[in-house]
Figure 1 (cartoon, one colour):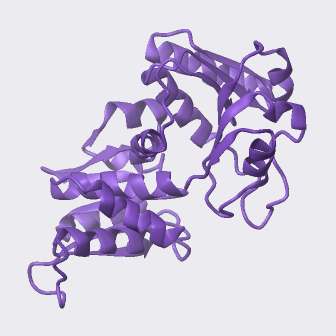
Figure 2 (tube, one colour):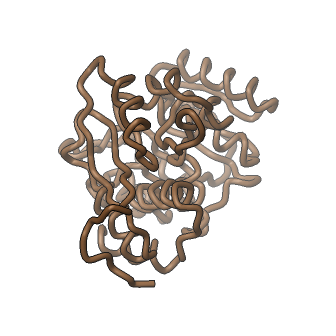
Amino acid sequence: MEEVFAAIDGKTRVCGLLGNPVEHTVSPAIHNTLARACGVNLAYLPFLVEEGRLFEAVQGAYALHMLGLNVTVPYKRDVIPFLRETDPLAAAVGSVNTLVRIRDGFKGYNTDMSGLYRAMREDGVFLEGENVILLGAGGVGRAVAHLCARKGAACVYLLNRDADKACRVAQEVNEKSARDCVQGMGLDGWKRLPNRKFLCIQATSVGLYPDCERSPVEDPAFYERIHTGYDLIYRPARTKFMRLTKEAGGRCCNGLKMLVYQGVEAFEMWNGLTVAKEVAERIYDTLS
């Protein structure tokens, strides 16, 4: 399995990342390591796409016979009109991060959410039947709300600074999932929740490097309600949200495993294979 291709040759397939900026990405490390570990003749590169050039980038990638692409900010929504097909989950959340080559174009998927689901299960965290507090109703929070509803969470309390936005997202998710499981409220809405322990998913950018000393909710009493805190941020590796969760006796995880598994899921779709768990774990350990 550890076959390593000595050099790029005429049979090398190319994948890459479209975004702006892309200089900070760790995706090449993930995918090129996966290629070596799985014996796949593939090279993965970042591509900076200037504003207004996304259509040209997608069309050019297909014309150049690229195998597949990842898409990052600010193009996860903007890329959808340029695709031949869109997976139902990606269409529902309005966000695509993975393009798979099909006839006459690319099909768009959201492996951020499937990667999060897979990472959570590997961490022993399950959405099915769970009571969830979800912090943030932005693009990521909205996608996570859809994931929770589709995977059978018992209830999702969507907390956001703008309560009206949280309510709009909750209504959208409930309608699209044909369930009534998401309830939107302001950030202080946790004070009115049932007296039980919750899985809490932190889907805001609060606490992201370099602004590391903030958390969306600062009240220590909030963290007494959490049995597991899952912060989607991975830089820093231990956010204030995670620290407060642990100090209150809860378990905490960061978003690095989600990052690894969204890459794994894309790699599997591009190459029609399954990545061994130990390979994904090795990449995770290297990036930790």
